[in-house]
Image (cartoon, rainbow, N blue to C red; front, side, top):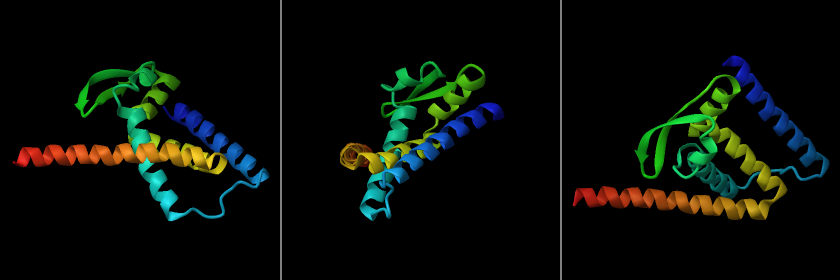
Amino acid sequence: MLAEYALLLTFYLASVASLTGIALEQGRLLKGVKIADLVLLGVATHKLSRTIGKDRITGILRAPFVHYIRSAGAGEVEEEPRGRGIQRGIGQLLSCPFCLGPWCATALAFGLVFAPTVTRFFSGILTSVTISDFLHRAFLKAKEGS
């Protein structure tokens, strides 16, 4: 799998280098990140990586690269990579929220550079859903305790 990982990493690094070059050329690269944006993007990255990597509905995106194993509760699924070569490499990436995290964070960060209003709006939605998820879990936990 090292060749496949190298290909994925090369794609990631080439994309980051290209987008950074464009941002520098256009004078868009951020000079500093506000704490509020960092928190917003951090929570949004968490939710986006879980939504892509575990959500039942986004299974259609992962289907060519993974096998469904079982429901994992709370609208999430457990899957394993399928196939060989790059198909399996992509399957490993898409089925792991921890692996997806840097990719999602990078996409949101460049979104902040090139389309800050849209990115903050979208990140706000993801952050709201994350807060809602935690409240749902707290409610269920409290309900079990009574």
